[in-house]
Length: 396
Image: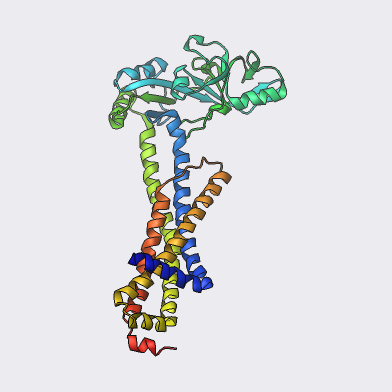
C-alpha cells in the first residue's frame, strides 16, 4: 500500500510539470528506441543472410579445386568424373556428391542473345540444391552426351518474351551446339554457397558440357553430408584423396556449418556494437533524467520540509524521488520499445526482408531503461533525503 501511495504522489508531481516531464522522457525514449531498433534490425539481417543456407540445409560442403600451374606437365593429372564420384566411398558421412562444370558461351534463342551461364552437372545436383521443377523434367545421368537442358526461371521468362510458346520442347543454341529444353526450374533462392544462380543458368548433362567448350574441366563439387558429421575429418580425407592423384592441386573448402557459425559470431559482435551505439543515446537520456530530477529537488525543498515535518522519514523522501525517476525511465522505455519495433519493421519492409519479432531486444530495452532510472535517479533522491528539514521549511 505504501509503495502504491508513493507511485501516486510521484505521478501527481510529474504531471504538475508536464513539459519538463516530456523532455526527460524524450531522452530515454530515443535511447531505448535506438537500442531496440538497431539490435532487432541486426538480428533480422543476420536471419536473412542465414536463410539461404537453411533452405539448402546445413550439412553441405563445397569444394573448388585447381591445378597450381595450368601450363605445367601436371595439368592433366587431375580427377575425372568417375574418380570424383568415388569420393563418396572414402567416408561414410558423405551422403551425395555432385561434380559440376561452368561454361560461358554465347546463348542464342530466336536469333537473340540470352544472358545465361552453362552448368554441366549430374542429376544429383537437383537433390542437393533442392531444385524444384515448374514444367518438364530435370537432366539425367542417362542423358549422357545428349543435347538436353533444364533452364532456370529467369531464362524461361526471357524466352517467353521473344516467343509466346512454352519453352519446354523449344531449341536453344549454346555456343555452336543446339539443345532442346526438357524442363524449367521453379524460382530458386540464390545462395552464396553455390557458385551460380540457378535462375540464370542452363543446366546440361555434365558429359555434354565437354562438347560446348573443349577447355571445360570439372573444378567444382557440392557434397551433401549426413547430420552430425565431423567436417574437419571429411576435409582431411578429401584433401588426401586429391593429393594422391596430384600434389599440385589447390583445394578450397566451404562448409555451410562453418559459414553459419562464422556468421553467427560476426552477428554477435555486430549486435553488441549496435547496442553500444544505441546505449550512448540512452546514457544521454539518463543524464537528462538526473538533471531534471535535481532541478525538481531544488524547486520542491519546501514540499520536502513539510513532508518531513508531518512524519515522513528520509527513506520515504528518497523513495519518492527515486520512484519518479523510475517512472520517467520506464514510461520512456516502453514508448521507446514500441517505436523501436516499428522502426525495425519499416527497415525490414523497405529492405525486402522477412520481419521477425525477437523478444530479447525489447526485454533488454525495458531492463536497461529501468536500470537507467534507478542509476540516474539515485543521486537526486539521495540528495533530497539528506536535506535539513528546518532549512527546507524556510525555502521560498
